[in-house]
Image (cartoon, rainbow, N blue to C red; front, side, top):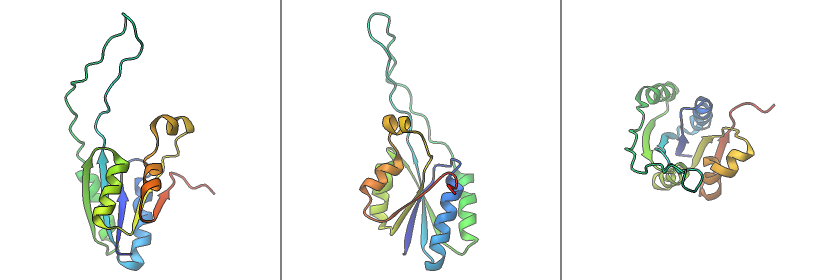
Length: 150
């Protein structure tokens, strides 16, 4: 196993995801690629119809991506302290698609990402990055849960 892609979103599960990847990478001295995908703002829709509906302007200025430089630095320091090499890739767009594309382009041997343990309604309306990656990945995928389920 030469290369592991680790999807990070800087949520509560991120540290667990990176630790799991380091644990798997250490015996093989695998390279770790930390990938963060910024989704931006989805288009807004007005609710309701009829004469009292207020249209929502669609030409809002795009939000700049947040600066995660200090957080990336801490993760890279943690990884390098174990003797492993890591790189950072920041992308903007649809997370599952871009994670899969980066995995293909980098020819990774494993994708590691976290699960947020959202409820069924969230999955119904929003889907899940983990679901999308699992469905289409051409390499093994490890999903790290937010909490231990023991």
